Amino acid sequence: MFGEQFYPTPPNIIHKMLTPYEKNGSRYSGWILPKHILEPSAGKGDIIEYICSRTDYNKPKFYALEIDHNLQEILKSKSNTRLIGDDFLNYSSTDILFEMILMNPPFANGDEHLLHAWDILYAGDIVCLLNSETILNPFNGTRKLLANLISEHGSVEHLGDCFANAERKTNVNVSIVRLKKVAKKPLFDFSFENEEAAFTCNDLNEESISGIQVYDIIESIVGQYEHMKTAYINWMRACQQLEYHSNGIVDNYTNIIKMANDAGFKGVDSFNIFVDEIKTASWTFALSKSGIEKYMTERVRNNFQKFISQQSQMSFTKENIYKVIYDIINNSSMILDQALEDTFDLMTRHYPENRNHVEGWKTNDCWKVNKKVIFPHTIKYGQYSSSHDLSIYGDTFSINYQMKGSLEDIDKCMCYLTGQDIKNIFTISYALDRKFEVLGKVKTSDKFDNTLESTFFNIKFFKKGTMHLEFKDEKLWEQFNIRATKLKNWLPPKEWDSWKRKQNGEDVPKKQKHSGLLEIGEQQTLF
Image (cartoon, rainbow, N blue to C red):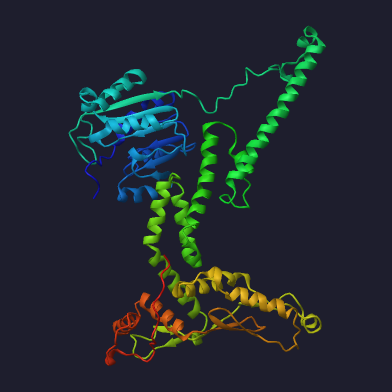
């Protein structure tokens, strides 16, 4: 099922990998581990799972990469693991500053994996299982480079054939390589020792005052005051720079400065927290530009949001973005078909009058949508007024807020079928809002025009809250029914064949003709 280089790490070997980090040297008291740990070529996440199952609180944040698609799905299902990429050897993102890498790479090219792990580690420890032959026989340049790295920054422990009784057995002799990396230029080690006025008010006490001239004290305080002003200007510049670059990506309801303040100023941990927040916003923004979201119904949109939430764990790189958008486009017909089926269900769920049972279909549980569809609880009128006030002052009409999304779904579905952009049509909601604005307040005794049109429908509304939609284009009505009932597996094969022939401009045999089918123009595509 999985690749030939997939060898899950046995629990006793994982424990051995973690031995130097045990609390008080006791195997039952857990480990002292950093907050941000990567497991590259993670398989099904055995190392991460082992640590989590034996840690009750203060668990690290675990990140994983895995190239096998089947194993990726396993990792995605685990709440304690963030899948951030696929091919580890091509991973080069600086989205996350890792403080530890625990790894069991493929035995065939473990040296390449370990050298790459060293390159992407910010600072901290690497614990890696390798084929012992990789270390004992440094016959090529890569192995020699690794040998030098181990000599300068780490150690090796030979374990022998410790996979002989593992979940997936092999007689390869295995070694543990431990490396420690110190950041050459720490990103968050801010020092101000060379600035003037190093003296601060914290240095003042009764003893120092007696020994320092008042003039020197005042000069130092003024110097510190000036530095505060300069630092504040720099801080304002940094905040404005954040706001400038976040424009459009971070929504108007999210304060980027508050986001930065909430992340804190504690080095690596704060940086990772902040990047995690802006990465989610950036993924959401980028995927919205694929153009697919505007055709989604509410249910499909909710599933898509779950997808974005999961996808935002991946590194925010051009390669990953293009890959995801390509996958979305490849699956666009499935997404839009789901939207079509949802709209069909919405238009037939309220009243039996909305359904047209078709003679000759399999059962009475199969139907088409009637040309006129009734929607209850769509219009609001007089809900917060007494009968006396309604007769004297009247009330305005409005759309029930809970129905706004459903009306938008209907228009999106019709745009899908006709190839139009919803931004360029007269939607149901817009048509109703315009009509209500013209009517103003209506008294209970008033006569008023309750009819209007949107791009696709003739519309009627009533004080009791009901709305009627009637398809304006009979061809669109038939196309909607044919496509939706086909998706539900209700449409007899002969009717589908007949419709497809007409789509292609072919003659339809008389015995296949159905009175309910009309000639339909070629459907436009989204992409």
